[in-house]
Length: 178
Length: 454
Image (cartoon, chains in turn red, blue):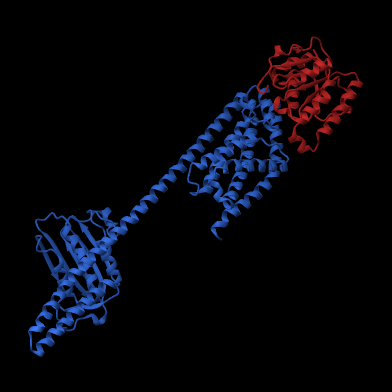
């Protein structure tokens, strides 16, 4: 399975985008792991004219004036060393954020575009603990090379979109709100 | 400072540099992350390219420095192990272990694939050459090129599926380039730099191998030349011995002749005379042998006698040569090693005899001039001269433009310099060549009337 990249038709439960909006703008974009992939999603949201607040280390207090949360998964050892945080710190922060978001009945979307290289132990821990609590999952074929996220979506009954590449997830992002 | 400690000091210096690089690396890593984020906002792939260059350069240099450091230590303490078949795998194991320890201490993820392949390639390329020739230059040159080349592979999105670029920064660069739809730029740059550096490393290795071959050939020629010169010197000695034995025959004939006459004579006076002459001949033989054995041996001899001995040993009657000698009117007594000085003069004159001439007849002239305490002997011929190229080498041992031993003029120069004199080529044209011998003469070298019997 080392070089196997599953085609979209192999993931029979994958949908190209949401059939109807899940939430409303303005969306809070945050990170679980502080990888630079968060900045890519932020820029994509700007390109798609999705109103957003970008706060990589958002907490529950930042939910004010937002109607949805996008969490971009991916642990960055470089940023963790520089900013002196651990995966447990991230896990705790994001878990609190998820809890407060659910308390406010706001949708949470989980995005992972880090491909196989980003699937280090810390990232896997975040995905395993937090992704089942999402309302919608967006990922790419290369990132879900082992069907890990697909299995979570099937088990937790969460709609999932698996795109061919990172630049094709914009349609899925827009479908959350429009 | 002893030369053997220089590699060790270099290894210690490299270790300090590697330790200091920790803070540099952390700063660079963070600045690279900022550039990656900027590129996503500005949709500009320039910062991605710069990030890639910085990343491969910095991590390539760290890998290269550690390699050089480790190789110096191994070469210094385990030099005998380098030539064994186990050296490569053990070196690679130790290196990979050390670099993992180093990066763990740095707190940075390690991309092990480029470091592994770079180490392997360098060891293979080093093994092909002669390891002792300029080893430090070789490992520094090759390690910088190979490590930089292999670390560029980390930044090529196209080959990430094979395990390259699996750490945070290369992954971030790749994701950003995929988003910006310009991963082909990184593919191109990565392959371009990798290819160029690998070609450079290969060419460096070829140059080193050529240098090794050149050194081997030069060493082989040097050995052959040493053997040749030794044989030539031996032949020269045999020539000198031959000349000496030939010269010894004359007084020996005198001794035999006179000793055969002694029994036939009853006159005491006559016998006494014969005995004196026998003693004189024996003394002459002793002097000749001493002249040959000891180059510092000196005896008083008239300049005219020296020239006469010279003329007697030259084949002047066999060849049509006009031979002129002009000496000072006042007889001049010299304190020289007669045998050697005659041989020296013979060598110079023989060159004149062998020279081709444009004239119908060869002419050789010996002109001796005394100026105060100095004697100048000029030996001139009407040959076709010595070329400008040969003039630079005529006094070098073994150099000859006529296929001879090339020792004549070198021997003559040495003999004259042993007498505190000088031998120079005054001039040489197509009309003739002129050598000048300068000999200092002491105050008591001026001749007094002497009688000597031969």
